[in-house]
Length: 184
Ligand code: OFO
Image (tube, rainbow, N blue to C red; front, side):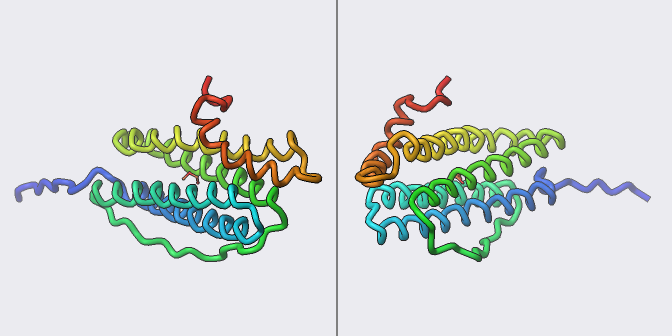
């Protein structure tokens, strides 16, 4: 009997597809968490912190969509994630930014695991695609760390919180202009 040759329809493995969809969920929940934080900051009178987090919520949605489109382009099936357990109340402005930093560190670890997986199985196309996220995470962690440092540098007493809120409004341009230590 003649041997049948099966041509694979895609190089994306099921395992990689699952990991990428899982990351879609993480980016979507980042977007939702930052939106919720933005709302809390806005109603608490921290207008600049709110704007910062509204922008970041949009950015996270863009991160999600970039992955989403990649999965389908690579022959997989991108799945709309379900977002649950959104926190609506925060102890303080500092609590918000502590959570942002913890969140970004978890996302970096998750990206690193997928990058490692892709390298191991020699999926170099996805490995290369993910380099954008590697760079992005480094920037996002720097930004979150700088935000948190403001609380220690300025102090929260008196007009401290008001000043911190003002400085949060300038932080992105400061980091983009090379104020972050990650620019080495
Ligand atoms: Fe998508 O970078 Fe933050 O989480």
